[in-house]
Image 1 (cartoon, helix red, strand yellow):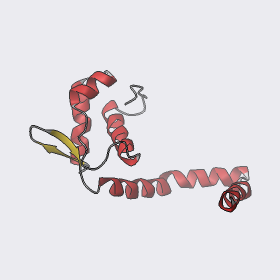
Image 2 (tube, helix red, strand yellow):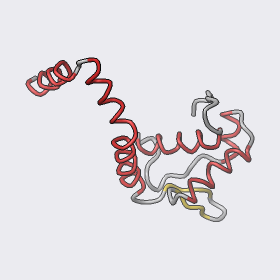
Image 3 (cartoon, rainbow, N blue to C red):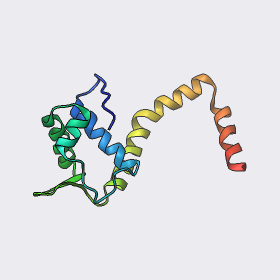
Length: 121
C-alpha cells in the first residue's frame, strides 16, 4: 500500500478504500487473508489502532470476516457486490459532472468518434 495520504478524509477511511480498490483490481481475491494490522501499520507508518479501525469498518460493511486466531479474510461474493455498488455510485455522483463537462467542452462527437474507431479496429 502506498503510504501517501491526503487531508480530505481520515487515514482509516483511506486505508479502507485502498483495500476496496485492491479487491476491485483483483489484487486481493475472495478468501484471501488481509495483511496483519502490524504489517500494514509498519509499511504505511500509521498507528496500529488506525489500521484496526479500517479493518473493523471493512468487517462492519460485511466485506471481510474475522477468523479467531487466524486474522481477517475477504468474504465470498464481495467483489461483485463492490462492483455493483461502485458502478451505482459512479453513475449517481460522478457521471453527471463528467457528462456536463463533455457537453460544455463540445467533446461528445470526438469521444464517440474515438469509441467507433476502437470498435472498427
